Image (cartoon, rainbow over all chains, first blue to last red; front, side):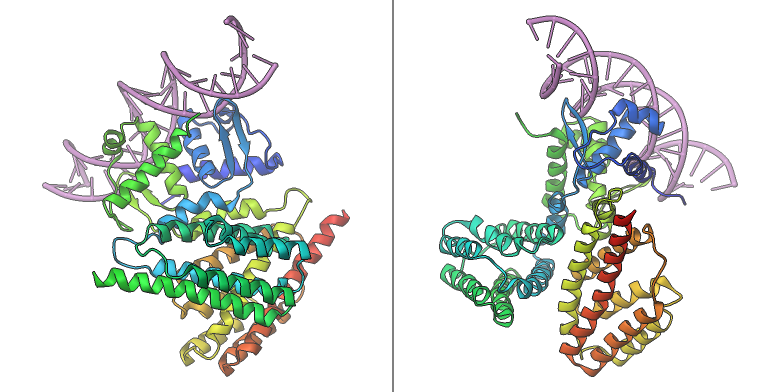
Length: 227
Length: 227
DNA sequence: GGGAATTTGTTCGTATGTATT
DNA sequence: GAATACATACGAACAAATTCC
């Protein structure tokens, strides 16, 4: 009937953080103190705290103490990767869904940033595009820099999270790469539309980019289905 | 020097799931077996498994066993809520960011479903709009049903997650409610545009809806800043 | 329904590694 | 280096929930 017991301990710890108004980086009570405060044994406390760390709510530093975390979205990359990772042949569907979400967010966002970027940012984007064929991290930095100015920390972390998960399972996939030049061209077109301050063109360019990505997923899907 | 041991154990368990190709619902090895397989004590195993449960990767049933989970996004509602919850006066900014992400996704999605919904779905949406002023769950069901046909499980869970977190912290906020009638009207307009198969109008209607929501957050922000 | 077996939940005690002072 | 405080890890025992005979 009643709820899981482990979860209630976690909730009480979170409530404790709120009650004491502990901000990110603030030190948590020690394990011994938590044992008394929550009237639980050390192991129960540790299991709850460990779970909260997996959610990014607290951060444990060995031999030093436990501190309030900032619940950054990157900590749940393992969870998303686990979900998206194809289960032995059956289904790149989850990966396709992930790309679609990326597309929804980025196509919507690009319309709001078109024409608002400083000249410095635009040249930085140009530089990233130039070395995109050699440095895989340039793509990640490109998408991050593109939306940095919008000031929405949550959306930035979401985009970065999705990027990380996508490339993690894409790398574990089969085919090498189609055309690096085409990817570079797609990104260059995006920068041009943003520089011109044309939201419609920027959205179209971004949609085109994701059309390529989805096509790549579809090819991999067909390849795994055929064997 | 080396990485945290707890995290290593978690990764090894996830790797074990992949190696054995265990799908959602499949039974995990018992704690005793995991102790031998991973050469760790029971407490260490339990801490790792507990963390994986917090991420939705496994599901523990007392007295029964541990099973592979489906990593549904709803498990990370506590993490998002923790992040978005205003830290004592300072900042509804995170909540505003959350609403913006909702808007990005829903405005983009509504353009793809406009004109594609069956008559049965449309009448069901009408019914939900009608009782939206009395039943708070109707709003959630409305947004879920609206995008159900697109077949993207990830985006459905994302929207539901954001809805949950938003209303969780909105309820813990101050002012009662401005105009329920206006909300109903906004949703009715969305249904009409979708029924008419007009993507542009649908996007505009959805944008209007979120304009209201963001205005509500802004009012609350001003209220808390003034005291 | 009773009872045994299995599995997770909780607790205690103890020893060890790590960072700070 | 020494002392202290803290997290990490292990082992053993008992409690509680579930399933099956």
